[in-house]
Length: 129
Image 1 (cartoon, rainbow, N blue to C red):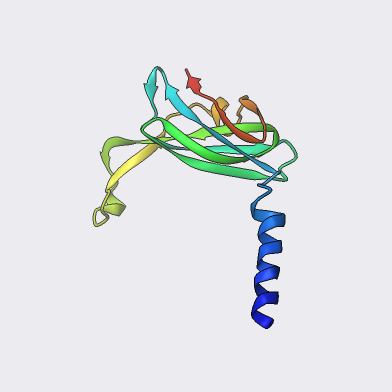
Image 2 (cartoon, helix red, strand yellow):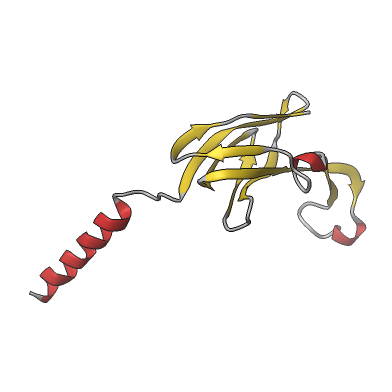
């Protein structure tokens, strides 16, 4: 009887939470290019205007897929690239080259990008210049 009640409770929890889906998040997937080229590695962040919810994902080979809060979101995109100078303080590290951010601030710290995230899955490509 105790096992039956435990299983019944688990079934109710799954019915209320798991099967109904997350009504506060959507899925956004797509591509990111900068000056016509796919961004090899970076990060994309979706942030509600009131900062009450933030989600992000890794950009790999110009592609991303992220959970995002439903509503009007600011989008921030960052990426770094190696520069041809070794960082002397990291000579023993696996990756001793210094990196520099190359995506302009208007796409990250001072982002003007916005997206109205809806429930379900939507596709959106970002072509940055």
